[in-house]
Picture: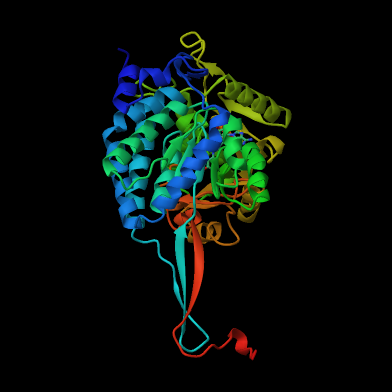
Amino acid sequence: MSELSSAFQRCGIEPGEHQGGSLAVRSPVDGAELARLHETPASQVNEIISRSKAAFLKWRNVPAPVRGELVRLWGEELRQAKQDIGYIVSIEVGKIIEEGLGEVQEGVDICEFALGQSRQLCGKTIVSERPGHRIMEQYHPLGPVAIITAFNFPSAVFAWNAALALVCGDPVIFKPSEKAPLSGIATFKALERAIARFGDKAPEGLAQIVIGKAPLAEALVDSSSIPLVSATGSTRMGRAVGPKVASRFGKRILELGGNNAMVVTPAADLDMALRAILFGAVGTAGQRCTSLRRLIVHRAVKDELLQKLLKAYSTLRIGNPLTSGTLVGPLIDEDAYDAMQKSIRAAQEQGGKVLIGGERALEAEFPKGFYVHPAIVEMPEQTAIVRHETFAPLLYVLTYDDFDNAIEVHNDVPQGLSSCIFSNDMREVETFISAAGSDCGMANVNIGPSGAEIGGAFGGEKETGGDRESGSDAWKQYMRRTTNTINYSRELPLAQGITFV
Ligand code: NAD
């Protein structure tokens, strides 16, 4: 039995589930077919939604700390299956194995976070202007949540959303990316095992999965029985999903594209910046939403930094992500390779100079795998192509002289996900994270833009969508808030001193 078949078996994915279907799943490592999944017929979607609605009526009455026990069990199952799910992520998405394992760890972390959160779904108590009155807020479960995910975090993004939704009292319907459904299924199976251990208190239909392409997700997006749609993916997808959900007054969490930058000032520790640039720009082959895409460097340190960077780029180990020591795996598919080539050509037409990389790598060894040499392109200014997210290891270098101008350039892109500054100058650092600084959802100091921890709220502004998930108070989006004014007096005074009868 192949290593993959054994991993499927240990994850509870039966041969009948991954063979004989119409959806072919290919590995970006070598183009080999990994599975043929059975797609969920569109005709079943209404039934799935009805089951979720029925599950909600029961689940919302289970006390939140008891719901927390379910995600605790899920975290245990993920811990146990970490090697197998990490391996499936790696072979299905092309991430190096370390990153595949890290992704499953994020799932474990959010389960632990959500367990704690299950005892902290707190509203405020507010003083009233009226004697003998009290105002308080409560957070109540919302209803079924649709979770639509992107290919590049096929396990963790489902866990981020589902762990919080479940403790908040919401059933979930998961639509994984059609480019990476196996990792999603493996993560979902771990949840099913946790549900089985949890017992009768988990209603039938609490967690469901649908397998297929965008139209399946659209059916969930259009359903007024789903009060919250959490969709992670391209800005193109968000543009389609956002208005549809808004038109039926639903809630949405949109986690869309980024165009993340690093400002390197003369006061930076250049060796630290170098390491952060490498992980940020070439890690996951530049296919993280938070990947570093723009380097905005002061003229005084540009040459020194570029010299170090080009040296490091020339020794990057590109190859099979399952082989230890590899740092850069393949792009997800040929379309991603073509998009990178197109962007490099556009950058050249707009005055850019390719300093290194961009070519295909390992073509003889992997004729159906799309490996590339990560590219650095120096630009004369922030042209149209630099303002566009290319989902590949393509780093643009821009030079600045004046710090205020660096911030202006930094913010002058349509996306607003993650950002960072490398500087040991307190004035520069504080300005960068101030109201007049980076306009992104995440602004880091002396660390790169990618590799967030689950404790903080994750998400970005502008075309990134404007929403947050994961840590901090992101849980509130999975609940509905009620304001209760309670009168414990024997009078009935009106607010604002109004007298009526
Ligand atoms: P994608 O937009 O092609 O697909 C994402 C998901 O949306 C898939 O499940 C797909 O089936 C579904 N989808 C596509 N069109 C749809 C539509 N019209 N209606 C409903 N659903 C639709 O994205 P991708 O190529 O899988 O992922 C890469 C993109 O995701 C990048 O832009 C990246 O920046 C972004 N991303 C963002 C975050 C974040 O948290 N901000 C995280 C990961 C990835």
